[in-house]
Length: 454
Image (cartoon, rainbow, N blue to C red; front, side, top):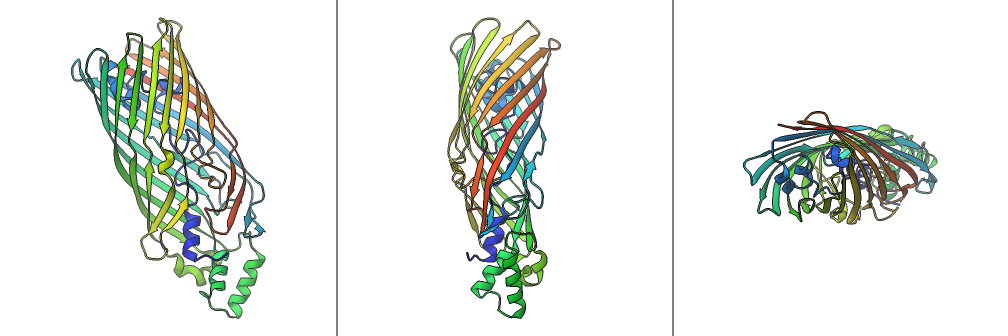
């Protein structure tokens, strides 16, 4: 295989999907935006409107909140992704390196506030983290040329308004401002870069370079000639969301909510290390600025919520996420060299299906339960990456709400997410490398929160 050094550095640098760990919702979304809703697996998210977190799930639901209210939550996310190698290769040689485990836990906060202007008009504000978190497989594992560390942090600021049109119908909408910071790192096989340049005539043949070429061939798959790249960048973007809530009667209602895509132009710095071949390849790997455009997908949710009687409530939700926006990852650098590189992703639109129930044991205690099936947007093993080792997943959610006082409710939730073991057979994200193996993935969530009425 022959490949320019610039192509090697870029392919290795931004292998596979851009910005998130194995995780929490399909793709690199974080659905943990409400502690009370989490206990129901977010079934009925666009229709329940039980507290101020409706700012995120459907701003039209703010019309059901009669007094100023605050909802705050803190979510501990405990993911694990354990990779087992099935015979990864560098060209035809076995890639040396250990299996690895990424288990980077994270705390995700959110805060929502709602207050009526009058009987018909309500405003709200949400601050949350809708995408991100971290994977880190270490420096020397077998998949180091595809991924070492991946980190994404986002903040969504979401001011909203709701208007009650009549006794049955409410509408709402808001603006979305998203700020993102990202870090990506991985190894680069500088030995392969040297061989391709040497074989194509880019590096002159002499006794020294002939000796290096022979040693590189003898050490294919090893770490002797490893270099690396670390990218750090940030950016922001704007979007919007709109929703409607229809009350069939006093006990049953349905809601619909649409959140637009957000275009993020991330820019920052690419820092390279060349290692043993610095004298020959250093000029081709100068530190410089770089950038990548990421599209956060649009979503459409349809939800139902109903009180069967004074104690039992049932809810359901279908949410479509348009991950087909993520067909490729295009990276550009500040200088003409290296050129822009395109990494295939080929993601598909997916749905999440949720069912839930709440049971009021008495005036102070409400138990919650939910089930969900969350489809993965990754189409096959050929483009799956350890950065986002995504597969279909099933949610089992439990929650408890306690009325501490007339003005204060406390919320607790636990979710076990069962992930189908992702297989990886990827030769397209790092030139000359085939990463082949299985990831045992799992996620647990523990959340606490409160709702305060004023």
